[in-house]
Image (cartoon, rainbow, N blue to C red; front, side, top):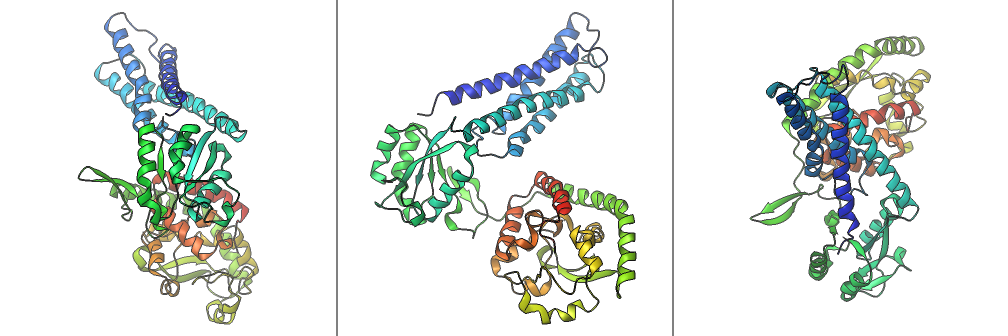
Length: 469
């Protein structure tokens, strides 16, 4: 059975969230100038108490529904804190409804102040707990014993992930396979157990999770371990990359009552995409207005130091491969395109992409513009025209797309952007295959929150000039 302290920790979290939310509400409700400075006896006081009670319980109810109280030791901080935004919004709605329907006393903006204050206090507590637990796990405390089924490449990758993240607090008891020796040479020296010993391992060790990282050929042998885990309440985690990188990340579905994993291509909601487009238009308009002086200075510098047009226009492939004219400040000599064939043997990128770190065609001014990504500012006009987005895979040129393999064309299934995971992860220091993988990862896991994260990471990446050339 799982350790009892998990249930107690869950109950403690729920109690702390309700108690602190109610405490914040009580303090603000009695605060002169913020809450109800004068509450008459009877119905007013009773209504205020009911609304405060309901708003306080919004927090654990919403957090529970979003899976916040489940084990999150492998989750990043942003995914742990994200549900608090939804819970805070629910608290504000309840408090506002109380003011409108029950006519509870207080200033009109009291619900917003109370919800924001509850959010700040509860987030501060959870952040303290999150950091403290990770600190303890890095030092060998609060760990969980883990068994990995398999001893091949996927099992080695699972082990390496655990070793890279000591803050997860996972301790590998051993590997379970149908052979006496590991199938991956890097696992030599690791404890290898046979499948017939699985029940014995569960009885002798306090196993908190079983990770299935075996090859597809071994999946029929998983019935017995799965049954043991079901009987003992041990989480049984099947790594979904059993088909490699061919399919996108799966989603849970049901087939006449039978749970299943759907590997269908990601379909993004129309409302979310509409919000993304609205953010693109507003953001591009503001950024264009703010960077006009920079563009003017850059244009003058280009005109004074080299011949040719200030704006460089190039055909690129956008959503689903549709061609459009992308705009950039010219950073190369006027005959750069004709000289490209002469330099093909110097290409430093794999795949169909052409990149040279010290490209002789780049002008002195162009090198500075590229260093700070100033040359890409005109692409904000492409964003306004709907050909690009603020965030998305970088748009390739048609000759590169013509050489794409079928799976690589998936990066064209979303509107191209000014910045992406590749842009903030090293840019030209990343090979083409990894570049495509990062773009597909972005598409499969896309959300407005992830776009915001990438935008926030872009500024420091640009200031550092990470991978720019």
